[in-house]
Length: 384
Ligand code: 1QQ
Image (cartoon, rainbow, N blue to C red):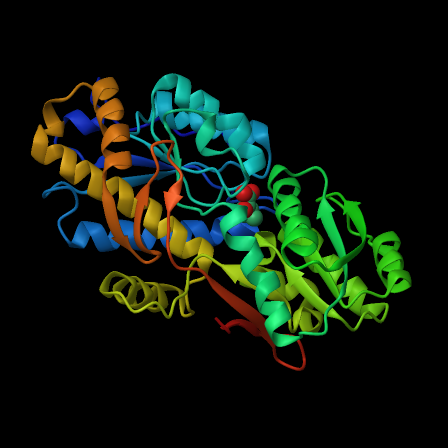
């Protein structure tokens, strides 16, 4: 990640203690392959900044997002966290993008007593990293099985399954466990084989050849967008005709330029739907469309929600004891407590947190990728 610019004239104990806008760190991937997700996160967070500041911010005081690029790896996430905590004196951090990065960077925030709201870390064990780590991204155990269930509803004859996953990525390793258990334990399907790959791979001949030889009715992929997109494309190019279920790493429209027309039909479970009826979601969806000219995807909805939780927890805290007079360390600690205590009406629905900081969320969805015949444009169509 690039070196941080020096913060401008921050008050000694941090801007939160002055009349300045309240700084909230956004540490997501703005560069690298992981920016396929991070760009959507920045867009969602910026809509939240504008929306909540127009509504008066934190009891009349605006928030200010401080963006710090993590890139796609652990070192970049660690750098971004350190910069936001020490240079920018943020009250809390939304980030990082990957669970793989969270396991490296979150302990730094936890040790410094800085609340983190994970916007997209779905691997098992994220909230357990520490007291200051919470997430609004529902875990793989709550989300992934929905896609398998939907696939079986559409195609009741599915019996034989091959599972593939990226073995160098914490989220993918966590998600594939859930998928494999869903296949064998929940639905008693035949798991013909498990194939591994790397998130840096571009050639999937070995894996695709295995799939064609095994001849399954369904394949289930846990990887990130660039690798998974190429895997899907090479599977279809080699002649695989069965069902494809993708995990959370295939949950972005930025997948479409990778697999193009071969993306058509992929089933992906969702923790957010732009069609959700709540007032806050309608406001978010309208504001997002006005800026981005497209419907918000899950990663944007989740990033908006993470910023919303910070704003509403800050406002609640400020009413109990004015945050302008708090020392930064005390404010961060009180804010962390307040985050966990609150309930929030968000684009993800009504949410709250477990004592450990995992999200309580009720509603999940499944979408299917629909590509134009020439493969140049596509959309997630909600089927559930
Ligand atoms: C994680 C994920 C990724 C797909 C986020 C982009 O769910 O790393 O936990």
